[in-house]
Amino acid sequence: MTATLPIAVAGCTGRMGHMLIEAVLAADDCRLAGALDRPGSPAVGHDATAFLGQASGVLVASDLHAGLKDARFLIDFTRPEGTMAHLAVCRELGVKMIIGTTGFTDEQKAQIEAASNDIAIMMAPNMSVGVNVVLRLLDMAARALDQGYDIEIVEAHHRHKVDAPSGTALKMGEVVAAALGRDLKDCAVYGREGVTGERDPSTIGFATVRGGDVVGDHTVMFMGTGERIEITHKSSSRSTYAQGSLRAARFLAGRSHGLFGMDDVLGLA
Image (tube, rainbow, N blue to C red):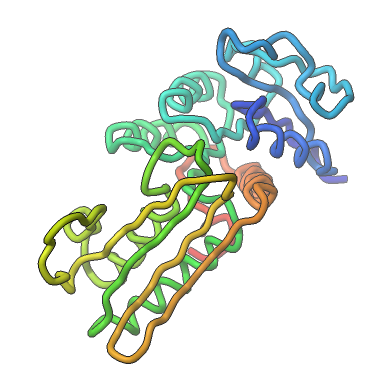
């Protein structure tokens, strides 16, 4: 029988947290071993699966040491400041991390990389298997369409998302820029207003839409003379992120340390 993976979930009372808990409960090779929420949350001290009308015996904790003491993996889709606090305790306790949080600064990314010398970490802006296949397709398309095509990235998310562009959109831009031999920091355009002049063909443009309950839509357009190629991914459920996270946990089970991405998990690296 496959060994059971003891998994804790950060931000356990949010939309993504609930989806992750349901996925862990439904997986034969996983068990819920911890549930974290912010101090002051009314859920602290209550059963983590109360929202499902059932009892798991796992209580929601705001104390990180208490919430992680029985876990060997933490899945974290929170915010940068929360993830960095979780990182310090996971490094101390030897808990492996699956990080889906976006919006990190370069300094925070460096701290995560440093922590991977001691614990295994899988970090990706999008855990969807489909999105990561799209990233590979974008690399292929950019290499083939490297002359005469303008590149624009359009993303849409729900009204509650706090960072823009999305981490997934930025990752798409990074993949395309790298394929073209560019650095996204030097060629990205994040907004246009007023008299902007003609488009610089060396740039990669971003447009952001926020509203409603959109889970996540991303389109990369390669626009040439007489044709337009669009590569699109649309998420209709957060369950794809949850299932990808569990695949990442299974991948990390055999690793003691190191920093990995979803391309490693899926064998696309």
